[in-house]
Image 1 (spheres, rainbow, N blue to C red):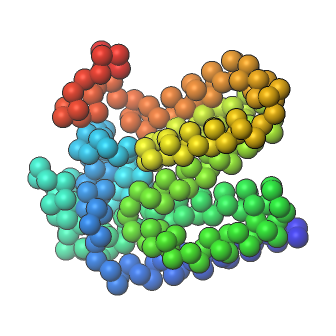
Image 2 (cartoon, rainbow, N blue to C red; image 1 turned 90 degrees about the vertical axis):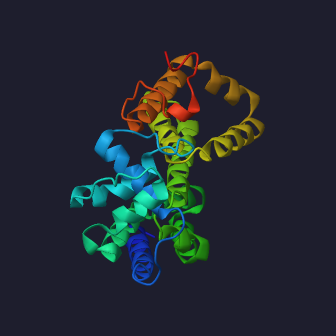
Image 3 (cartoon, rainbow, N blue to C red; image 1 turned 120 degrees about the vertical axis):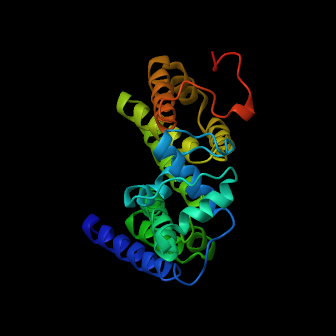
Length: 260
């Protein structure tokens, strides 16, 4: 299969799945956490803060709230993030439009995950298998479910898949470019959801077991490239937090090293 043909098929599959996802927007009202995600995302855009719910990093929420912020919505003056988010979704009497805009941002991550699924499948088994993998991905009920709501799960799946893709690129060629891209991908994954961290640890452990000792020693011995990857990850993650130099939340206290 030619690359162009495979790319077209992947695009058609993801577009068809996206149409199915969008068709649910006017059917289901807000899910439990959607108002909280919207409110915290709007705070990120309006005030540059990620302090209303520190157990979640801001990337996914900022993306979800972006269409609403640029539509003109601003945060509601309420302490409870669920009540505030609900009020924000009802702004201007356009509840269903606002909810659809927030949910539509999740499609960015749905497409990113689909492209990564194709890339990983095509690299390992050929383009035909890559296309088949995308087809299976695009009809899985859990995938369609989480991609249809303004939740952080699809963002985590997409950014972690992107990290896995860049990890294999790094294993194939230890170059500065691959190291930086791997670091950026790691920062995006952690910035989307902290749940990606244990998955990364499992990936690192599996790599250590499967790699030959010489290859593992060569990979870990290049401190310059590992430093570049770590620096790229740190800068990406810090950028997601708007280069903040204050505690993420006053409720979390201060860290003796970070919060000086």
